[in-house]
Length: 108
Image (cartoon, rainbow, N blue to C red; front, side):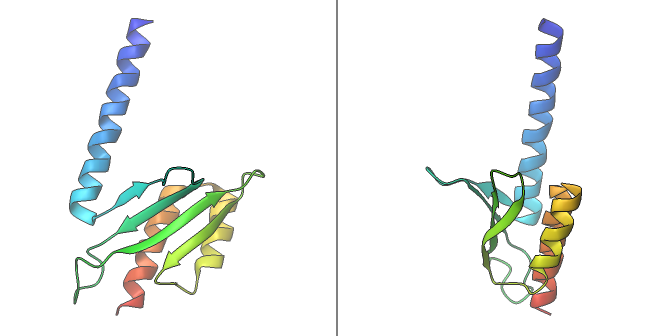
């Protein structure tokens, strides 16, 4: 039991480190508001004219397990296509990268 606990702790520490690196280098942050079922994803360092500007979207997972966007600032046109892909693949990391790419395109 101690060995699996140690392995879990190491994995958790690696994830915490990865989150910190993403926060520092990409301005990427994840948060949930008390009482909310949405995960808010915020990112900065996207707009070269205003690197501190936050770009955000909130994701909701329905009772059917399907993802939806509760909010997106600024709105990007291809969100619906990205959601279809996310719901097919369940690859949330790829979805976040794709949203970042779409935000970047919106300021170019």
